[in-house]
Length: 281
Image (cartoon, rainbow, N blue to C red; front, side, top):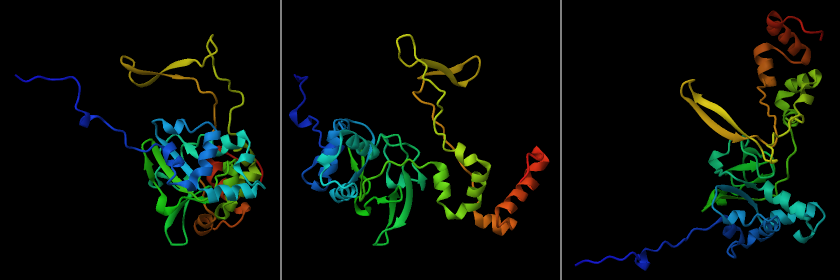
């Protein structure tokens, strides 16, 4: 006769051997992140990085934190306020995973936990490696990039990221290759409207219990068999813009346009037949 037991053999027990992001930052084998780990702990976010999820952590090393402190006239992270720690920690954390391969030049499509978007560019480091730069200042260490943990990816960086408040008109203005388009935006007043990032007239709909309302809406199908989903009303209504900009070189080479008057005349040529004259130069 063969018997059976509900108790599995001890050799078949599952032993968790992975490393969570919190362990990575606090490991004695990586003392170079001890200052950032202390900041994350003060911000109350270390427990979050101990849980399962899909996070990206842009981890500044101690040299980067010391440089940041010196720039602010501080000598210790103990001199940072609670609000400082919260802003720094959230600026370096995202609740989605990004490898360097997934980072397109421009701006990451997902904001960080401080609700700011990080700018991405690629340049060569001193060893001619193509490295990823964030906000045009901090770069991800080439030899340490894409370090995986159980609940995400750690991207070690050499600078503390500043919380960027730059808007689309600021980025356009700083690009010398699109100066004519920038001047046109300024003269028409459109650049001012591009600073509007939130609908101030919007108020989140709440139910009688003071909780965000759920809205049922159709996501596909037909009248007979609609596909319905439900979602909470968002807390804010944010605005975003995309600018399709013709570079100065294209305006010059293709259209012979070298100044704002030439751009205006070309606009009249292209759009007056459809819209009629809308004003004087």
